[in-house]
Amino acid sequence: FMQKKEEKDVIKELFDDDLANESPALKKQTVKLRKRNAKAVKVLKSLYKECQITGTEFIFDKTNGDPYTEAHHLIPLGEGGADSPENLVVVSAHIHKMLHYADVEGLDLTKISDNKLDISINGDSYTITWHPKHAELVTGTKKIKS
Image (cartoon, rainbow, N blue to C red; front, side, top):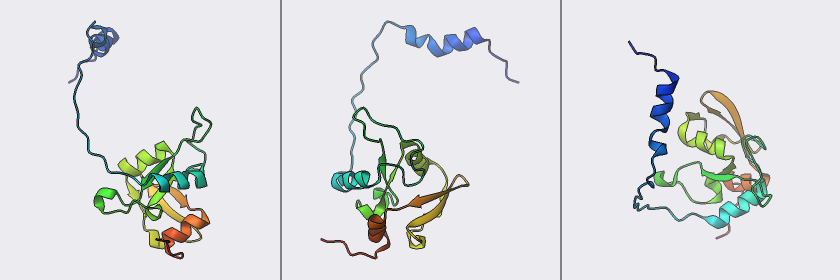
C-alpha cells in the first residue's frame, strides 16, 4: 500500500533541484526537419484566419494582431502525404495536438460533402469545414495549375 506523502515532502521533491545555484547543463542536439511548403501554408492561413474545426475557439491573437493558427497535414509527410494545399487544414494549436495524439476517426476525404467532413476525436463529434476554393482542390473538382 502507498504511504501518503506530506505536502512539505512533495514540495521538497518538486523544487529542491530548482534551488541549486548551478546553471542548467547545455545539450547539443541535431534535428532533421522536412522542408515545408511555406507558401501554401501562408495562403491557407490568410484564407481561414480561424480553425477549420472549431472556428474561433482556442484561437488567440499574436502580438501583431494576426490570429494564431497552425497547418496540419491530414496524411503525415512521413507516411507519403503531400505537402500541398490538398493535404493541409488550418487548425488551432489545441486541435493540432489532438489530431496528432488523440484517437481520430473518419478522415476519409472522399466523404466530403458540401465542403464539410464529420470526424470524431476521442469519440467526440467534430466537423472539418473547407472554404469553397480550398474544397475544390481537396475534392479534385478543380485541377491544380502546375
